[in-house]
Length: 211
Image (cartoon, rainbow, N blue to C red; front, side):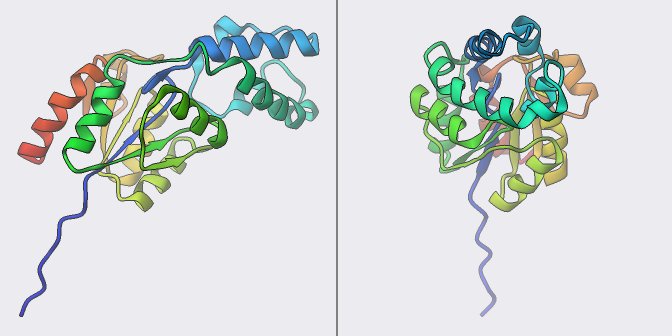
C-alpha cells in the first residue's frame, strides 16, 4: 500500500510592531521615560518612525557603545510600565487571526521585539497565537518561519520580506508601517495589502487558488 500524503497544516506568521499592533505610542512613552531617567536626549518621535530593526540599532543613535547593555536592560524594564496601555491592535488584526483559525491554521508571531514583552503585549491585546518567537530580524526570522512550517509571513517592514523569502514563504506586505505599497512591492513582496482588513479575503483566495 502506498503511503498517504497528509498536507501540512496551514501556519501563518505575523510580525508584531505595526503589523498586528500599533506600538508607537507605547514605544514613544518608553523612550521619553528612558531619556528623562538618564538625562540623555532621545528624539522619540523620530525613533518610532523606524521600528523594525533590533532595539540596539536605535539605542546606538543616543548612547555610547559601552552604555548599550545597561540601556537595553533599562528600556525593557521601563517598557512594562509605559508601553502596554497605550498600544492598540491595528485594523483587521483580530479578524486576520480569526481567519487563520477558521481555516484550521496556526498563528505564529515572529518579531524583533524582546520576547517576554511581546508575549505581554499579545496578552494585553487579547490576541491569541500558537507560537511566538522574539528577538529576530530579517534572515533570522526566516529560520523561525522554516522551523514552524509557515507558508505565509505578514509584515510591514522590508526586513519582514527578507525573512519570508529566506523561509520560502509567501511574503505579504502591509502598508501600515514605515513603507508604502510601492516600496514593499519593489522589495519583493508577493502581495501588498493596505492593512490587515484586506487579509481575510486574500487568505481565502490564496487557499482557494493555491497562489
